[in-house]
Length: 330
Image (cartoon, rainbow, N blue to C red):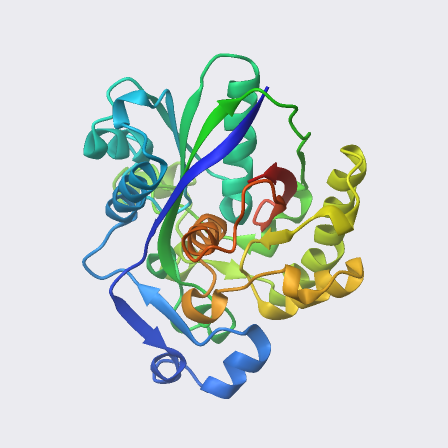
């Protein structure tokens, strides 16, 4: 028993900030950003929210799949930037689309989140607990970005992607995932709810913590993350291929988290695979964390690049540090 993707959807904010717009905020340039990241533009949520984008992506995925909301057994939402804590974002999606029979919960896996959500859905399907699952990755990273930090503000964008998967009677592929919490400070963002809410004087009396405003925004060791990605991503892809006895030449597409063009090109080179098998869209959207893989899947699905029977590797990597890969058959 396995799972098959039967529909995709995506949603990105209307407002687009190009590299010249970023250059108005920090010392940088369009050519500098393009050369180092491959990013030209990013979509920024102004009137949209993490949940509203998730809702729209979910509706489009259901429509594309020809699946009714009441057919959903489970809704998983991957996000690090939800505009709601309780109820969870997945419950908000359930309410918006009318999926009253679905169990809902959120998952925080950062840039590996969509892969981890798929792996979770697959486990539920293989166990026979659920048959039809909606997976959503949605992020408003602009609200966690330090727009004074050139090393990070050039990278991130907002958006949402979703996919409907259903049970099929065929053998499944074994996914692979890893985490290393000892390197977690390479990508860090404190919660604004970290303090206990006591009046300042009382908080001081009991040794409470006070953070600066910039501590509540994303902080990244760019070089450390780059070195991590170009080493671990090829290794985890090779691991998932070997575990499933699949050869690299059998893979039609490697759909990776859209972090940085240089990272994806380095992964392709280390694997000895043509870079053409590594589709990229970060030029238009930047790094949208857990939304990046499903946005790209939706683009490729709708423009006809994805064909039934193709073998695809999905691979994510990011904060945690966490990384993983899985093989799907379209």
